[in-house]
Image (spheres, rainbow, N blue to C red):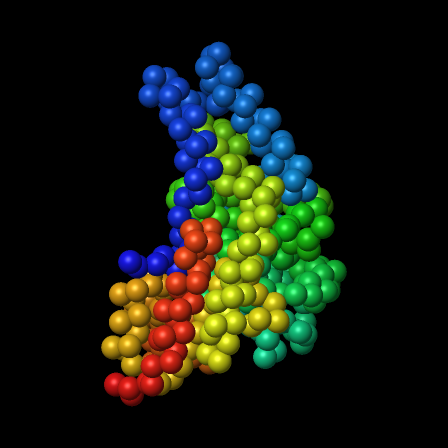
Amino acid sequence: MNHYCDSAATMPILPEVWTELQKIHEHSVKKGINISSVHACGHHFHQIYEKRLEHFLSNIGATAREWFWTSGATESNTWALRIALLNRPECNHLVLHPLLHSSLLEPAMEHANQYGLRVSFLTLDSDYQISFHNEHIDHNTIVLLPIGDNEIGSLQKDWGVIEKMKNSGAWIHGDAAQSFGKIEMNFSKIPFDSVTISGHKMGALIGIGALYLRLRPQKKVVPIFRGGGQQFGFRSGTLPYHLIMAFLAAFEVWHSSDIRERLKYIGNRMRDTCKAHLITPVYSCLPHICTIYDPKWSTKQILELATKLTYSQGSACQKGKGSEALFKIGYDLNAQRRIIRLSLGLQNFEDIEQICQIVQDFLNIHPDHH
Ligand SMILES: Cc1ncc(COP(=O)(O)O)c(C=O)c1O
């Protein structure tokens, strides 16, 4: 049996999400669901949508005007950067977190190169925390940060340093693709102008994400798609009702059951098993990520582990190119080939002890230096 430990890449769909989809299924094989249309069928589903959305938004401290559905975190990040640049037309400085996902890093670097913007990277301490910044930050600065990074699962514990940047006038965007749902988040209280969210990282379906855009103070929005005028005219296109319902059902599970605590428990169990090889900072980390490294592991050993566990390798998702984020924290391509990211999901509540045993056996094998 191969155990799935790659939920940070994509999490298996939650059973509650399937139940939700089955409820819709019976209707949708007979009639189409377009919640923007004015006929009775569209209106019926629009009412269900509005009620569910309102309930969801009240749980996260956001309003309907601040919430845009997208196809996923990649789109949200691209859009967020365009909105930031529209609101800060004099922007001359991008301040980036070293562990930024490529869907933010690449468009940011491209823009900076094209328009000659200064780029600086925040300094992290040994726990991968932004403990200070010595950059000049003002109204013409855009700061891009992960709210929990995908490579090693670090999570900024004290947001005071982000608040300071915000108070200096910077525009702050946060990428919560890995953390949304898994940690408590009240959007009315966090120091971000915009936040990226991904559905499939929390057990909804692939193809749905969101962009939160704080309304106060008032912001300008650049439409990402024009056409039918859906989503206040800023993202045209028929709303994907099934995907949205899957997203809302998944969030409901994270929000109103004990799975956050249980995921933290199995994550800690995993990190404890691997503590001698851990890169993930236990001081403050995402509950589901456990990234480990040993310079002596051979490719053969790592491949053998892959016959028992499904995981991501440090350099894997960049198609062998290596991860910029891992380079930035000191792991060259050779080292990245020996980085293993195990990431857990709800499916692992059942098999965590077997996984820990497999990892324990792997760690006990004497490295064979090949
Ligand atoms: C931090 C982060 N941002 C963005 C993305 C892109 O997510 P999506 O697949 O929803 O576009 C990922 C996916 O791995 C991620 O981990």
